[in-house]
Length: 114
Image (cartoon, rainbow, N blue to C red; front, side):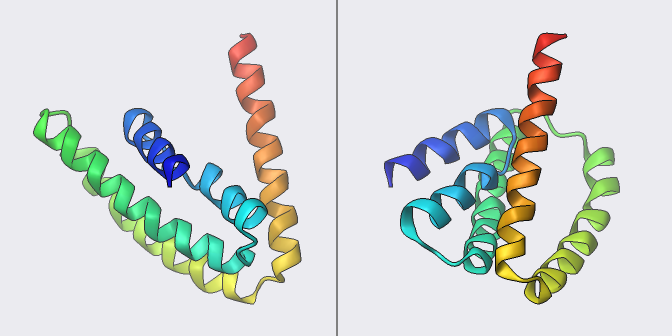
């Protein structure tokens, strides 16, 4: 519970969904099947993003033109991704997610060094 509170707070602060931390936590620590972890994370990301959005909206820091331009693509791609993930082998999904995290770590390391 405390870890989720920390992840949620960090997510709202810096604008990430938190799935990068929540999915490995659910799979590795709580032995949740990968497909359930991904779906649960997607729901939690929506809840977290809504809270962050409301905070930024209240502070007057929302660019509606950008938000409305990006929203349709996000919703369509989210639906496509959810439907495709049902058909992907769960072991392969873990491997793909691991590659994604590794690539993200390399990218962050490179950008930090520059």
